[in-house]
Length: 167
Image 1 (cartoon, rainbow, N blue to C red):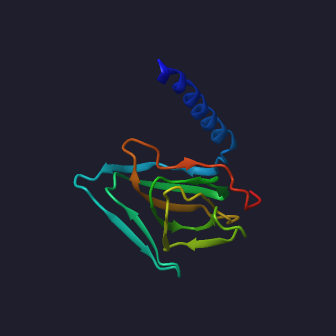
Image 2: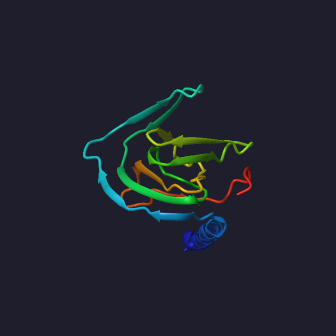
Image 3: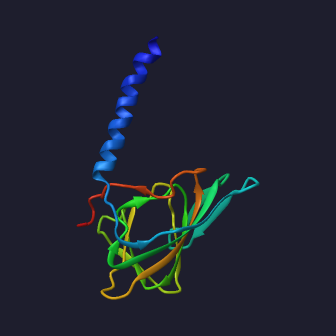
């Protein structure tokens, strides 16, 4: 009986946090399509490491990777993703147009633009970011390969704006 009294306040707090995050989430706009083309689980235990040589020698470790999802996303001129994160790393390939990527951890709200034929890795694992198509006339088409998605779970997690950017 003691545990029941403890469970209700914890459940109420969890629901309150979920509502608060949803209320402050920044939804995307101008997303023309976002079909998922494949979703699969690794049959054997897989340990994936990405070493990003951006001056920091950042190593992303994914021990015992779960599902992988492949998605095509098309964003109209001026469209954006809203602030969000992913459960694991994401390999992003720009098929057409240009994507401008804003890092939620950058106090100066700096950005980096990736153009047709370029690829990059978003670290995922809770890293909050925002991307947009800053073109006035060309659609942005990107392909994303999400690594370490919970089985049957979300590969995109909406997040509130971190406050470092004016959007």
